[in-house]
Amino acid sequence: MDDDQESTVIGERAGAAYVVRVPAEADHELAPDLQTVLDAALDTEAERTVVDLSRTDFADSTMLHVLLAAQRAHRGRGRPMVVAGPFGHTVHRLFEVTGTAGFFELAETTHAATGAADRDR
Image (cartoon, rainbow, N blue to C red):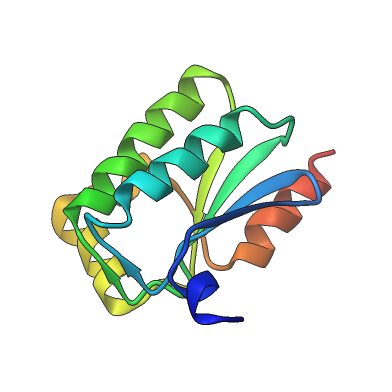
């Protein structure tokens, strides 16, 4: 993977899911790109959106705000959105300190989250 891909939000179809891969640093500079890709996910015919945070070492409140808004939008459209790890310490701590973990459907791994979409078919 080249440097551009390692610092860019990437959305791609994976079976019945649309996977949004978030890079190592998810901060205010990345927020518009993350929002764009999450909005695009809703325009696909995927059964669910999976947000892959397994590579994310740093996340701030801006990223959390984007995820919360996307979760609301997905629920409004009747589309499940799963946030997948494994979660790094900073991401885990962000969910813990803000009390927002319960707002999301969380999965241990992206594979588990996308596999769940394929089993539901």
